[in-house]
Length: 399
Length: 173
Image (cartoon, rainbow over all chains, first blue to last red; front, side, top):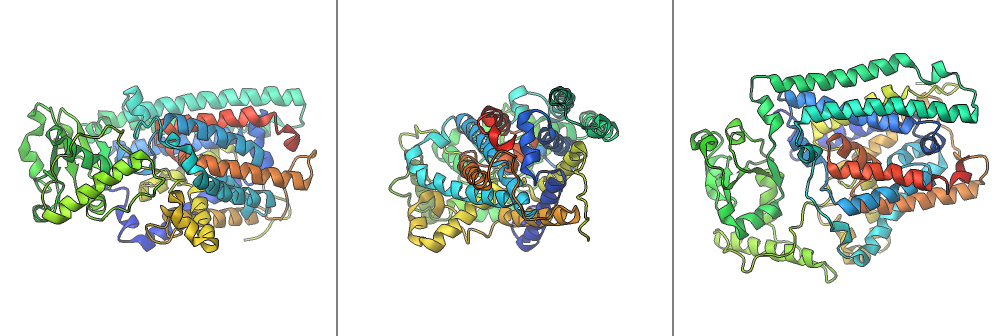
């Protein structure tokens, strides 16, 4: 796997920030040219006669999805690993409520947060004021947080993906989503025609629904999706990687696992054995970068979870993918574990929730055990009853 | 670069969508991150609060979490959003749309329109924190990565928009 280029977030951070500006430039440029710097264009979506928002957004989603599915199929990138680093957990109720409120805010302001930036950049005062409102709204949230109790973290499903929900291989799912999207686009144009004839707007239909680019775009999306499905037939390890994805555990989940239920997990450290000998996740076997082939994981009964640790988020080698039981990697790799387990946690504020206090206790115990004696900590007494606290944020917007 | 007298037409929505998808795909591929917007607003809010009342930031866990690891603006997303402003500016200028003004419907005054823009922004800022992202980071980027929560969020954004459309119709139509 070549991508993503992890270095851009760590060692070559300055270059990464330049790339960030470039990514943002492309984003802002395209949004403006799609017409999204004008509230009148955006809100038309919600009055039925112009489905541009829907078309642009879903074409964007499908394009990125099928493109990555194809690159993953030929082994250039691990779709699930990128998804894990780029998306947040699924909090069913809070996300549904947040989406609804954001939709109400969208039609009220005329922009969503991203498009309000582009509107401001085009000179629209209403766009600038919308973004100022967004800034203020995040502050309101911070002030109200103590009143919300555990609501923002309720119904936490961890990181949950549609391929896990449906049980379909990623490329097949991507093809289905692409076909549904194309069907919806055709339906959306039917709706537009109904609304426009009702309002008797003077628009030349040939210009409004330009058929040439549309056919070309639909063919491209479906073609790439089909090519991604075809990679499932490749005789290399790519289809196995496309079919199977290790679970990604946050350092805190790893800590809970190795401290509270060490008999359920077998930790394999794939870093240089010397590094591993110096410092490792409690209970790790130092197998080194290539030693995993000798373990015969494919013939194992698979009763325990196999947890792989590398310096960065591990991509599971074929030997590990052959393991019949649960397979997991550490989110952010050993580097993230080191940051979690070997730095003293900050005391939670007096107003912190019970889950936050519990997380602090776990981490403080782990920290003192590892830095004090360099030994595995004793199993925590009693075992936690509160649900494990999952990775916060992670979505691009929440940073 | 020039500023054409007659604004250029908007791109065909499907071609614009493909361009958006390519930018998103490259971002995910190279950086392992999605595109976003509201996360930068959160960080700007922390900086603004810290300038006025530094003690308050330290006392509010939902704010101090952004000052714990370096400067709140020293973040990938802040640079990405700065790039989006630049990209929007260049695109608007080269298309002949760079012009100070207020976009509004015919039946509402300027003050009313601006008040609603601010109110909608406030609501979205709150919702984006609760949703761990907005239409860009949660719906668009998460949707492309097939996150279940992102799809729920996205469908509810459209539901919220259609539900409230009648209430604010006077502003637009």
